[in-house]
Image (tube, rainbow, N blue to C red; front, side, top):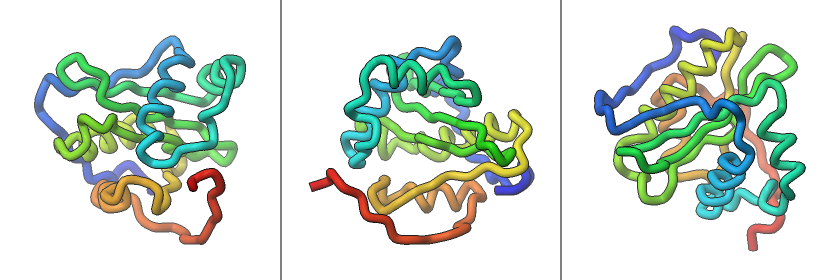
Length: 159
């Protein structure tokens, strides 16, 4: 996405949905959400990280973490990372299993994209794959993101 005007937001006008930045960074939050959400989608890359790696990751300059809650219960999260070329990548985006299928994904992605554009990038992007939720690509496209490139990668450790 190359301009905020390309965003097709979907909002939920319900005060039970809250999306807030995680400030100051809390590595335990990133670790917990990554492991809990990622367990359903074969997220493997960071599962075995120790505290030092998680702390360095979560506290790294340019990483922005947001927590989503529904009626006070943790519902999901997303991470935005400033890339070295002036863009913002949605690094991780997901809902906990209990909140999937409740219509929160579009509103949460809209919030992620709005927060990303507030950081002043020249583009906002996300890398998705067939291991993600079956509705992920449709949600990205419904919000105005478009397919830039496709490819095939081999992922190990998903037996």
